[in-house]
Length: 325
Ligand code: SF4
Image (cartoon, rainbow, N blue to C red):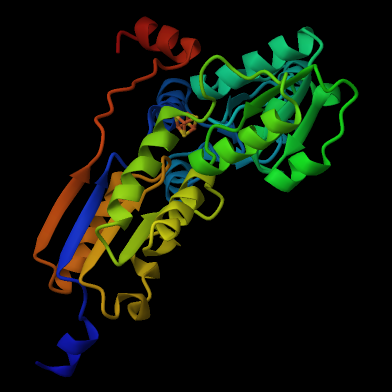
């Protein structure tokens, strides 16, 4: 074997998690910006990253989308799309004041959590929001009832939590958390506040749950699990944690260029998955990377079938119908 072939040594087997990658909320949000560009032309402003993936944001920028941090940066009267992670009511108010034309690409499953927050607040509960400080979704949800909401990130936050009325507590969660960790936090909360109430159905969304289930299965079959996703993607980071908890070495990468050769040492089977905001073309490029290093056995490990789809926002549907598209 030549020295160049030695340098390219890699696993012989690639196992792809299924389901992986785009969820219905991300697909809808990305399509919303694409349609907005086609229907209204440039400029289309987007508040925050439409979804937490660098590659997706760069592609949309190339097509003419302008990403801003706050709605206050959008020139008066222009069009702005709100990202999949949701926004606080104050953002809608600012937009109205600036006469912005808005399209809300908030994932319907994030909207569900906002509705719960409003309901619990109206019923006089203290809302315990389980989530990660600084995440856009958490900021948006908190904004529904800022005076009534306390953020809890860990079980020890529950230990130190003090509220005015321990019998009037409602919990809700971010949609992209670790299923196992969140169950433990909820259990600790219910132990401390037995009368705490929660949502009728889980706030952690189907896509997060399914991707964690599939990476768990993957981790038991592979020495190394690579997760394609951006560092600010909550659900992608959770996939790395779950893979590690289940015995595999695991890393989060934006794309195949970030694979460190040292990770591949002694690895026979590499597992690949991708976060809910990572496009499939990045997975394909990573598979090609391993094929070029001699992997000749590429297969999929499916744990569940997904068929969730969300309708595009009403404004886009109306315009599409009017344009005959
Ligand atoms: S990860 Fe879940 S909550 Fe977030 S956009 Fe996708 S489906 Fe919606």
